[in-house]
Image (cartoon, rainbow, N blue to C red; front, side, top):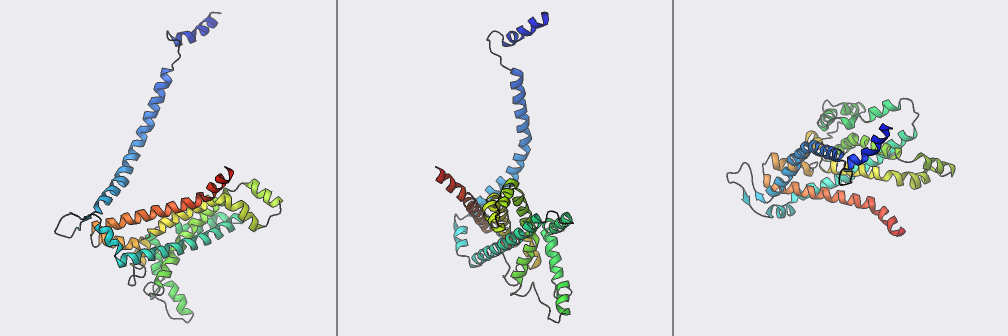
Length: 326
C-alpha cells in the first residue's frame, strides 16, 4: 500500500510547481553526446580544411600571378593573363585533346571488358576456384601504378624484355613498344586497361548483386530471353553503380600521370604526354607556379563538368518518369 502511494506521487514530485516534466538529465545527456560527436569530427574537418580547402584557395589565388621560383623577380599580379595564355597555348591544347582521346578509349575498353568479365563471374557463381580466380583478377588493381609501370617497362624492353623474346622466337623483328611513335600511345592505353578493367568488373559484380532475385525469378517464369532480362530487369537496377564506376574511372583516367611518366616519360616526342604530365613539367621542372596553377584550376573545372554531365545523364530517366507521373 505504501509503495503504491509513493509510486503514484512520483510524477507529481518530478513535475514540481510548474506541472511540466522536463527531463533535464536527458537533455543534458543529449547535448553532451552532441558535443562529443562534434568534437570527434573536429580533427577530420581540420585535416580536410588544411589539406584540401587551403591548398585549393592558394592555388586559385596563385593562378592570377606571374610567379616562377627560379626567377629573380617576385610575384607579380597579372589578372587573367595566365588563363588567356592557356587558350592560345598549342602544346597545352594538344595535350588536353590527347588526354580526352586517351580517357574515352580507356573508359570504353575498361567498361566493356569489365562488364563482360563481371557478367561471366556472376553467371558462374558455382564455378570451382571462383574465389581464387577473382583474387587473381583483382591483383593488377591493387598494385601501385609505379610498380605496374616498371613491370611493363621491363616486359616490353626491346633488348631483354620477355614479350620481345617471344616475338623474336616467332621469327619477327623486336618491337620498340615504348619508343616507337606508332606503338607508344596504344601500349600505354592497353597497360592502363590491364590495370583498371578489374575495377569495372568489381563494379559490375556489385551492380548485378543489387538486382532483386525476385525480379530475376519473375523474368525467368515469364520465359524472357537473356537479352530481355538484361534490358528490362538488370540494367534499370544496375545502372547507378555502373555509371558511378564509369564516373570514377573517367576522373581517374583524366589525371593519369604516374604510369605514363614512368613508362614513356611522355615520349617519344609528345605522343604520350597527357595533360597531367604537362602539368607536372610546368610545376616541378620549370617551377612556373603561376601558370601551372591556372592549368590546375582549368583541369579542376573540367573534372567538375564531367561529373555534372554524368549525374545529369544518370538522373535524366528518373526526372522523365517523375514528369510523366505528374
